[in-house]
Length: 352
Image: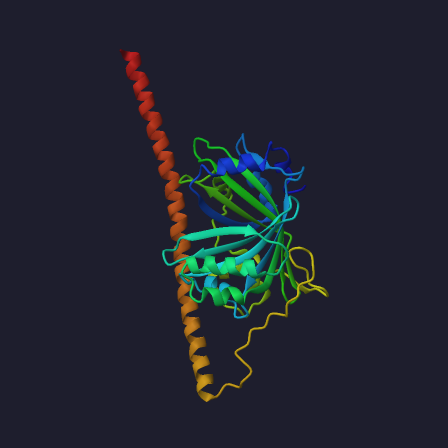
């Protein structure tokens, strides 16, 4: 059975109506990673009135994203190390519906995430795209914004098929949206390919009340996960990179992946890239005794920091889980309280 069969039974919605509905929501985003085999049971519990985006007769639309980073991987390391001011730059291509957009996502000193985009052609950044990226990075307070933008180069391609859902409000869940990504593939600039055909990434966007898709995932034992398609994919392709932030997801869902090579690497648009292989070096000069000692100390420090971050991540995940469960119980208690008051009012009116 095709794990997406349930989606074929849903009524369709066009992009205009989907966007109109989405604008009414204050978004709380959650991401989940689960085996593809678990997906049918989750989708089987979608409420009546759920709709799916359809464009040109297609419901599982193809996406491709070309991520850009500096040779030193400033974007990746900013996310991996949880820096307050960090950024992500990608050219996203909607393969089936057409159109490519340069997207710049930044996180500033107040931890507010901002994403903006402009149309773009090709997989390289022209002068206008570089200038746009520099402006966005500068507005977010990213240090050396112009220099970083000038040094951006293609680093990683992601490809997948996405189904987009619009879910109605129910007695227990608020109105929400969800995306289901399958056929997940990552392609490094050096030609390494990572494919996870038996894994699915689900993202939900809801208001203050969790949506129906969240609640179905919870009932089947799936909790929100910390994952970045760029960060996690690059870490899986290059295990030497620091990746403590995504360690749990990498161990649980990327532990049995296979990385293969391409004779001719491809890019988001399907054309061969014009980039060199990614290299991670400390420079061509040999390190002396003091440099060696410094490197050893830094390595030890990173191990201590990684152990501490792993502990805090586990605590944070548990807190998030407890909060999510508490919110569910609170909403259910409020609903039961309203029902009880209404029943009492009806009884009093009947006694009069």
